[in-house]
Image (cartoon, rainbow, N blue to C red; front, side, top):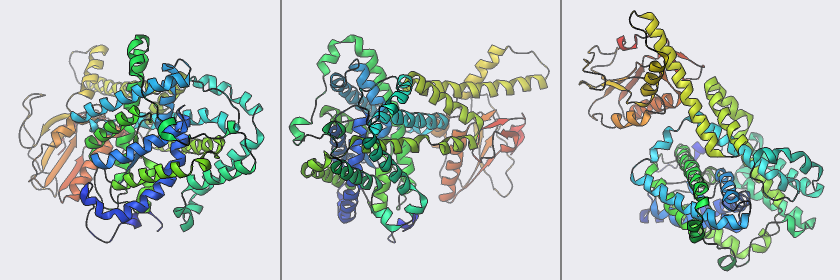
Amino acid sequence: MSSLEELAPAQSERPENGIPGLKHWRYDLVAGLQVALVALPLSLGIALASGAAPITGVISGIIAGLVFPLLGGSYITISGPAAGLAPALLAGILTLGQGDLEAGYPLVLVAICLTGGVQIFLSIYKVGRLAMYFPMSVLHGMLAAIGMLIIVKQIPSFLGYLTPSIKSIPEAIILIPTQIMGMNLEIFAVGGITLALLFGLDSNMVKNHRWARNIPAPLLAVALGGIAGWMLHFPDAYLIHVPKDALTQGIHFPNFLEMWQRPELWIALLTTVVTLTLIDGTETLATIAAIDKIDPFGRKSDPNVTLRAMGVSNILSGLVGGLTIIPGGIKSTANVIAGGRTLWANFYHALFLALLVWVGTDLINRIPLTVLAALLIFIGWRLCAPRIFFKVLSIGVEQLLVATVCVAVTLYTSNILSGVIAGTVTKILVLCFDVVKALTFEQESHTGPTESFSTRLWAAFRELFQDPVIRIGDGRTHRRGSLPVMSVAAKNMKHPYKIYLSSLSCMNLLKLDDKLKTLPNHRDNFMIILAGHVVDHTAMEYLHQYREQHVKEGRNCVILGTQHFLSHSDHRLAYRVSHSDDALAYG
């Protein structure tokens, strides 16, 4: 096998979750074992990056594996602790514990439980799809910022420089030269070799070999690092520590009473819950969408059911001292490659995780911290590598601007939520600027009273957030008055069902999505006509996916009016701004 596409089975049956899925146990059992071998070092490293005991990462992986198959939502995603949430958890622990990790952890467990409750509440009201329309530029910026946070936080362990965790990223960056000067050369050498090995195994030259696909890179790197640490007799302070009796020594409980009795921490608690909910929700739904694309059986996950499953898992994980839970891209991809067919692979993965910890504690405790730091730095680099920013730039300069603002504010404030808010505000300002400019051009092109700038700004803001449907089908809408539907059919399309759209962005996509779901199924020809001032990248991606879905179902669907827009790049899904006001005349 040279690619994921070659994994599609010959049979046409689509495996189901639940009891019917148990008949695929042979495939899921083997996949569960391989995923557990990948998940073990990741879980240990993510826990350390979160400022928690290593065993907490394994606990959350076990809880997720036991709960997720029973609640469904997706098919081949593997859930557990995620590196993307580690910076937010560490910040939460330090804030709630006022710099004391041990005191802050029982309090952040309260936040994890509340995050799970919020996720269940959101799933009840079907808002799981909301994250699917999260500004893509902000999402790219958030993930890149998380990658940078992970790298900065892991440098001390990577260098063998023992120091307490620091919440402030600028302060942590300033201390890096001091840490380099005081590094332990043996520790750094093992970490450096491990990191080089991970990058080497990730190269296309190596990944094309069968042995590289069959041996999980994280497992191989951690195993070799453990051997090196054992041969060099690293002191215990530089090694991981997992209790031999996890049931009595590894489980911690949330301290609801202390949190209730300390009102001065409630704002910090609220901030932590909002941050965890935001990152968990967006990453969960982005991950299942990505994994659905490589599902050999072409199945589609239910975002709201998945969100509910994550909510229940987070509550249970928080109650027994585990970390936040999220579908993992690395583990899920490993599951697909290993042949996993249903969510029962999660269940078997959890059992194998528990078994590995039970019988292999002595071996686990020989793993140097620098090795896990190297693994996390590798994951962080994949989130913020230069190619990510070049990819964003290829879509448009405004995408890079928004992502950069998100990254810069996150690093400056050491707060992911602040970066996301700043990026989103920047996105709205860019859109408003272009709509105001278009409205000004229209005003100058026509005689009549001149509106003030504030009036145009408010009009732009409303246009970006209101229902984008001007008129639809063969009837009339009343949002902009009673307008007759044009009857001229597009060339080669007989009696198309027309959908005229105003400015379209991630801010009003949900309203469009609700309208499109009400379209009649008996119509075969659909025509989407863009007649607004702007169409952003997220909206373009949505429209193209909508068109592709219609084509797959045997219908015709075309998108018209793009010639009236100026594209910000050559990318087919680039942000577009109108340069003409006659788009309604088309079609």
